[in-house]
Length: 280
Ligand code: COA
Ligand code: MG
Image (cartoon, rainbow, N blue to C red; front, side, top):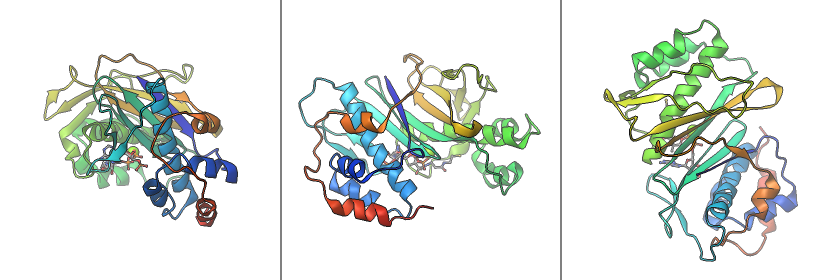
């Protein structure tokens, strides 16, 4: 099992780095990346592509054959040429993360968990908006276990990320009836004195049937600057070891050696397009 994350918020790409990265990515993906309005989204999408390449270099260190990664009709990137390895990536807020395994499928999601920016809405208005997507157990966990609005938003994002990790494990897109999924949280709070803590005792019932024998959910907090936190959630077979995500640097990503069918030449135009994307 492989789990990696990158903080794209902290990365201010240089021209050299951006062009080096574009050489590792297919033209189709580059066109998608440069269509985003904001640089933040372009960076996350580009890092996602680099993380795919990075995880393949770790999973297949000896390989000299070429990998073909394509999206399913639902948009999920998968290795067409070697389906024994499954991976899934996610990007939101500051982080981009990826998990991959040779043992079954994997679903991965990340969300902000604790942020300093003040909220415009109360949790009640947010949860009411999504009430039809949460079960009464989940709704209670979000709204009733604490009167502290920060904690309530943490619980909201935690359940949301669990649901997303399952939907992404399935490989379907929007449209899955999320209220059929009922997550019961046992470990309510993470222990900040153990930064690599993995909580794996959260249970999922689908239509009142526990799936404990088939699926496990690993949840981890990444402690960011300024006391902020982000949650990383993985849906996987229970046979896997619990292991934390490992942070990688831009050098790690750019130096990964993996034969992917990509562009040989740097095209200055990609950097010009990136510079034109908006900062915020
Ligand atoms: N299944 C699994 N993974 C998918 C996917 C799919 N159908 N489609 C795309 N992905 C991968 C891609 O790698 C994508 O990144 P990329 O486009 O840069 O390559 C990445 O997952 C996006 O994941 P994430 O960053 O976590 O985005 P998201 O949280 O917006 O969710 C979907 C992605 C596809 C699952 C989303 O469109 C969706 O359907 N979400 C569930 C709907 C919902 O209502 N959730 C609310 C929960 S309360
Ligand atoms: Mg997500």
